[in-house]
Length: 439
Image (cartoon, rainbow, N blue to C red):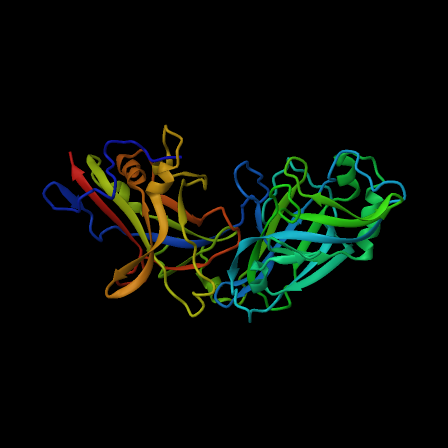
């Protein structure tokens, strides 16, 4: 969605600063109240056309923000309708393939602890038409263990040689004899996709939380039809007509389900003390891509400003505070504001609303990370432009100024931003900068 076209809102790139003759600014007189809360309502089962399906798989222990564990549920389908292995067909071996999405969050150095993965069969039926949240833990049949693999995350970016041919970077997990037996039995069922998924419910991939992992790599579940370009299981088999045969059972968004299950554990971590049920002028705040910490902001006195002022510029400024681990467990490239009401309902801020249907509003709001010099220091800042939202609060169209600030929907479970709240003190504290004119 795009920016509101109200004629009271001037693009921040051309808007003059306050001159106290024609335009004015509020100064630092508005009381800002904040809190850090946990948000776990993230849908990770979406299969929207035009968007990649990327899921995290790994365990990361952040010394400040605690432990994060990401697991993947996904299904594969036969390569063709009525597929079978042929007369006398026998599976010789199989490999589970996950294409590397090219990004990881956390420690990606060669000395980082390896991630250890285990593969099981899902223990209940999933549906591609159902919505699954990151907080859900669907049943797993732990009696059907199919294989494991330890991998250095730094090595995932390298191409993989398969049968003397270099393939795009991907994770390969050899399947064991238990998988071969179960999969062969599933192929003797009715040849429809529904019957196959009833017989073989899909894969659950988990990361070992005991190995001290410090990274969550991301894998692409969908992709084109080329081998190794989407999540799949590759069968090597023979039948009466020949040997050295292969078949690719791949994820297909039109038939198969998927989602990313993510758990956070803040116990014993310094970040645990930041979560609060009440608003105050907190000195420190934290934000993570959902599920995780989000920042809520209230400015009660904003609605008390004169109703006849016209907001030319309004920017909420949030400054990152570095910790010893900030280079490894770094903050998001962009943060996103949402408006809230007293009932807890969440909706787009007014600056996202448009008649054009383009992305101008998202670009206008900005919220991207940039470098600024503040009091002689170079800091990372996020500037969120919300003049239309502020105007609505002042005019009475909104009952209060209440924002929830989150990470983007991409890369669930990634990123950690420690930010200066309104109580931090000094020039880096959270501020709402308003420039307005009088009617």
